[in-house]
Length: 220
Ligand code: AP5
Ligand code: MG
Image 1 (spheres, protein in one colour):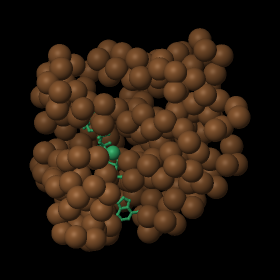
Image 2 (tube, protein in one colour; image 1 turned 45 degrees about the horizontal axis):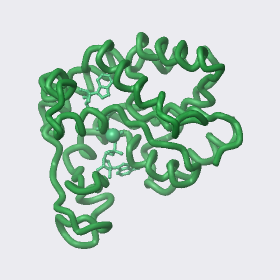
Image 3 (cartoon, protein in one colour; image 1 turned 90 degrees about the horizontal axis):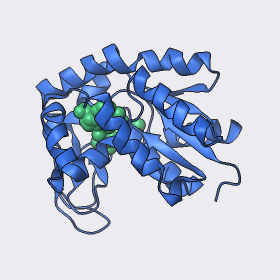
């Protein structure tokens, strides 16, 4: 367990490998993995009120409004396993969300330790997202070419069926990239100005990105 509180924010476009790398870092650092997209997808599956509010935005590749998103993530961060830190994946995604996170951590006497920015060219992202498959049971992520399961269409961990996310259709992917550049990329400068940003080349094999990330979070 980390000795000092450690809050790591993974920033990067859709398909950069935030989820893939967060799972590895979670194992290496024993920090809870808090992924806003996963929290929304769980709410959609459970048909909660929050899921109903979020559905149309997610289907169109738009951002869910800040008030709904901030409340959901803050509730997750207030749980006991997050008192010593968390690995945030997909949140914050707007300046308003970043400010809300800074304020909430400051109120706890804590702050963000490091923000790895995983950069990948847009053309590579489209290829990654169109080949992504997820396990229906445990949510583990694969790629049909770059990170295939041992058996076709079956999860290595639990044999669960692999499926494609609805928002990984090409037209929705294009909108997610546009929204990323308009609304989320300003976070790169926001965190650079605060001296916590570390750029990671995400256009490398998964294990090489993982090694670079481990170095980046160990040095902070
Ligand atoms: P979310 O689930 O967060 O989606 P995203 O940011 O679009 O990111 P992805 O999960 O698509 O990409 P990733 O970087 O995790 O890549 P992965 O590791 O899977 O959000 C979904 C929606 O929820 C949003 O569109 C929005 O509507 C809503 N939402 C979520 N958070 C929100 C917020 N804060 N505010 C408002 N709305 C919010 O990798 C992708 C693929 O590439 C995989 O197949 C993987 O195997 C492969 N791969 C990974 N790394 C490599 C590599 N190095 N080489 C080759 N292949 C690789
Ligand atoms: Mg993800």
